[in-house]
Image (cartoon, rainbow, N blue to C red):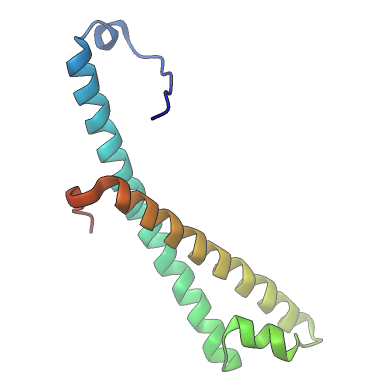
Length: 110
C-alpha cells in the first residue's frame, strides 16, 4: 500500500489513529461511489454519441477507419468526434472496472 499525505484540520488530526483510519476508509468509499456515478453517466453519454455515428455510417469506428475516412469536412469532423467519444467510453469503462474492484462487495451505485 502507498501513503498519501493530506492536510486536515487539527480536530481530525487529533483523533485516535483507529478513528482516522475509519474516517479515511469512509471518505474513500463515498468518493469512489460518487466517482463511479459520474463515470457511468460519462460512459452512457459517450455510448450514445458512438451509436449515433455507427447508425449514420452503418459501421463501427474500426471498420470506418479500415474502409478509409471520407474526404469531406463533415466526415473528417465526424471521425474526430467519433474517435474522441470512443476514447472517452473506453477510459470510463476501464476506470469503472478499477473502482468497482476497489469497492468489492460494497458496491451499491445507481
